[in-house]
Image 1 (cartoon, each protein chain N blue to C red):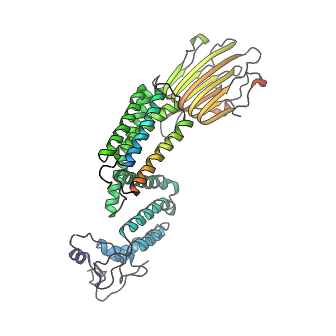
Image 2 (cartoon, rainbow over the protein chains, first blue to last red; image 1 turned 120 degrees about the horizontal axis):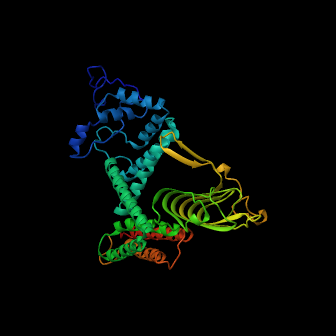
Length: 405
Length: 64
């Protein structure tokens, strides 16, 4: 890194270090401003106060601090995992050098646009690599990487909405990214609104709004700038579309439901839950020989069925996105169609499960222990140990299909 | 800027795509169709792709 350069012509601060521009021949901020009217001051690498590339000298001059402080900070950043090296290299590549002697206000070698693009790329790369260089690894990466991605997405949205490439001073680019992020948040709210409306039964109205927005765009294409309407309308359509594809509905309310019917006649025709956790515990239910139907309808969440070991379970399920586990068999993914219809052995009872889940998890277990505890976060947790799920032992072995094995 | 009187191709295509997408969603909600992720995903990708393509082409032609 740079070390102080003793220039006999430069003014000295009372504590012995250069207090201002160490390079009397380079244009000062005031000179540049005076020469170019209201032109903002420019960060440049010093031609005279330099050890390697004059980065620290230029930064110190830009902020009006002693170059020694800038160099100490730079060395500290190098020792703290090497981020200083990357930053120094980035500044070396992106910050122009002082204009040649007598060339006040000389244009930089690269165009503003390409340098802006370079700055964006380097900043994104730094945000990705810095956490690892600092030793924070995924802990810091969990904060900085999403910020980097968010900034890039914000700029892309700005580009789409405004029709102009992000360029200008860093402050301008930051404003554009913030605008894009704001638009993203607004679209997220519209997506959520469409999702909730469709799941609550207003999907036809939401679809009608999408059509209306499309028609407005067609008309607006001849009249003026309406392109901004595309993103909110697409967001609304996506919210409605996911509900439609997953088959989510909000019947049955939200929360935790735990049912323990005493006999087959106590079993409801249909157990519904819009979102949350549904448990139907048949371990204490007096189940007759023959088939006992059990129908579950869960919008989003987890449905658990507990049965005694001598009960055979036949199952059908439609899951938009998620997972089904019936003892030692399972299937997962999008558009999961599950059917496993074994026969009961030796006159055992058979539960015929019919499940519809929009997004979530269906599991059928034997006598699985329920573990109630308070987690490390102090919140009440309840989970089932599916390692004790067992097998579908109440069925004829020869009728068990190989599905999901 | 686009020539006077000519439509913004990006907005026009996006509008038509949205009308079609909304019609598909409406038919599903009216239980005429049964949308699933296997069919919706390609439709959504095609819709977004058409909008981006039209926007890009209109900008290249100086209509943006």
